Image: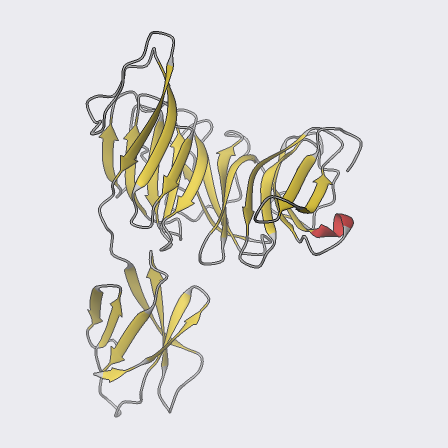
Amino acid sequence: PLSDPDDIFVARFSPDLARLTFSGVYGSSDRDTVVALEAAADGSLLVAGDFNKRDLPATHELGPNLPLALNPFAYVGRLQPSLPGDAALSELTYLPHMTVADLLAHPSGDVYVSGSHWGPNFLLPATWMTGIQRTPGGVNDGVVLRLTGDVRRVTSGTYVGGANGENAAQLAHDGQGTLYARVITTDPQSFAGLAGATVTRIGGSPRQAILRVRPSLDIVEDVVYHGPFFAQGMSVSGNGAVYLGATMPATTPQPTNFARGTITATAPGDNDVYVQRIDFAPIAARLTLLGPAAGSAAGGTVLRLRADGYTGPITATIGGQTAIVTRDGSLYRLAAPPLPAGTSADVRITYGSETITFAGAY
């Protein structure tokens, strides 16, 4: 810890909560915050928040160099509980021009962070913002970034917002790879930058938008504008149902127009706890056959397949013969048998309960 008392404290307990198995204090010489903490598959801890001063040395600093007078500084870190002392903070990456609200460890191994950018004079690097909305829609937009699993590099990002200020406050996934974002907004209009999305409006006077997003961040399947109250929590089930929880002030009109459950009236001045489920229609994965890759199998060619929105097992046939399928990071590799010169074959892919054929693709 440094001199300021408001540092970041992280603790890990045994499953029965009976023992403290790890604790650490980290921070700058000013007040610091931690807003999200998640256990990674390798046993490390991912942590994100803001430092008010940048005097804790970073292992990686992404984007433009920032004057030390500017604050706060968004950060993403990785803690290794097996390492002693300050060495446990094995990765510390500063992110420019934004404030972090949430962090998500994705099944693909990537790490997502969300929040909002500082304003029109502090844009995020254009090389990051390759997603569906590449420029802000207003003064302060929500932001979603995808980082590599070691949190050393941003691979894609998108702004999310309309004319008013927004904050991408919460992230979740459905276990199959599809990403969901809860974006706080007071904009009554659509987010113009999210072209192509299916738009639904629930209730009145939107206070948040629920987005269903491809992991690549370049496609938004659905936008649900939701009101008239702010949700405080969001959870997504394995079948894609989104649950929202909120405390609804008595002064807020109760949304009987879309409630299927029972709403119990309360005396004036009381607050109700409100839980709502939003069901999204199933979406099919977008499969893209990328063509040959380096390597061969039995004299044949290795084809690459990208499946956006799906991370489960697949089977494949090429020209009616079974292909050997392996994973290569975020891609699938299909070991194709050799074909006679001058001939072609169909590539048939089965994933989940769906089958798609690329005619004459090989």
